Image 1 (cartoon, chains in turn brown, blue):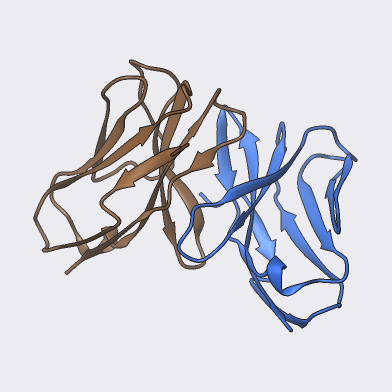
Image 2 (cartoon, one colour):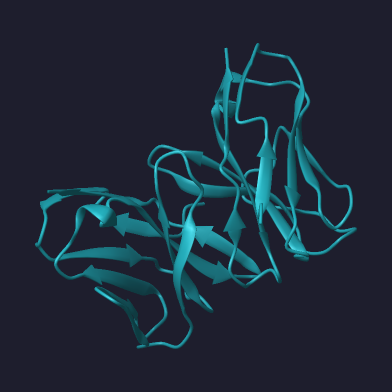
Length: 112
Length: 109
């Protein structure tokens, strides 16, 4: 049982490059999330999708876009990467918005 | 806006000692969750508390939700090396969960 799968696990980008982080869940969950984790800041919500076909901004959406491709998949795109976006990114899913969230293993992104 | 502050930020203790981690806010939350995260992994849910004053026990871990639903604590009795990790609280408000700043616990054998 894979749970939440994120790709890639590691990525180095140059400033201004673009990339998409992929996330897929196999638990038939309705809600999916993208967080970033920085030292001393905990986890901060970037975007979430309460259900298939909807997306909403979280605490720190600037510089990011998302797509809920279908019920299983939720991608995060950086159009023009900046060093401030160096972070560990986590995708998560839950049955409903306020229930237990299951996290992927994270993507460590470095922007140079 | 960081709504939840955890203390202490770092904690290093000997095996067998007791400890308490605090999660404080000026905001009221509908529910509060505690997660543990190990290096290189995503957080894993430990418990959800919903009612003000609620106490939940999970083996050697005791979780309490404040009466006013603004704060919570996690108490670990007789800590073991397997308890080492980053402990995160997360409060529910407006259909979102806001995570705390985290407490990094190291239990030395």
